[in-house]
Image 1 (cartoon, rainbow, N blue to C red):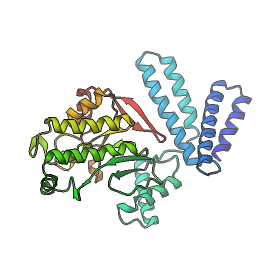
Image 2: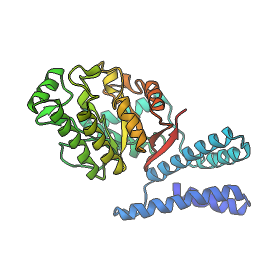
Image 3: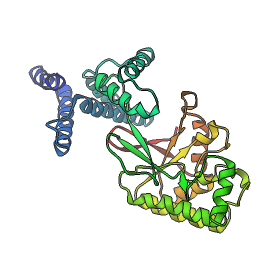
Image 4: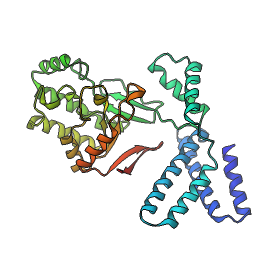
Length: 328
């Protein structure tokens, strides 16, 4: 039905000599053909409507950003052109659901899939995507631990992180953090192994984002256990950061420890962020939420710290990849 609507729109625009509308709809059709090529490469006959709608949502977002840029530059004519194209693209999109409708859809999906725990979240997401394509925008990501088995099927983006080191969970309790240091014979060796573990993810192409890069310091704010200003710590952290950045990985500013009361600043530390900026690194902001109440926790603080470290843009997932957006 969606493909027919696009084809009919081209015929109507040609018949009515609507050159601007024709140009925009042809751009949509070209995008559909690209999606079909991608789908055939994955063994499918053609792209699903959900993939086409996701592509059109990306087209809308790109034009919204361009319109803002033109308007900021006092080019109202070009901004109006972008907004006219947005209106045409939106004409092919289903009506977006409001918050109450989304909540009801989620409750229904949970019941229909018999989801009982967070492990069933994938089933719920898949059901929502299939039933409400274009009405709800959902992207599924996975946090991959360096100690875990590799399974990258069914997800659209991936965080790479390291929670386990030498049989110890790095971030479970302060007592275990101390035991981990003792296990390795001191903080210097523990840091060497920890950051080497992170650096190994440079070899995993599926990993897009480096999660909580200095998680090792969860219980070490203000140097409670060891000095992160020491050359041995900085050398290990900088070396791993440079390896991961050279592999094209994006780094996460993570506020999870803030929302759960363990830290007052996000991961990574400002010093590491300054080094990341100096080597041309990229950042995203994430709340690492374990509950709805902590979503977007301390994002204003993250933006403030990012600016102070020299960053002027953040990176966002757009459904098919990552793109930058200027810090406001």
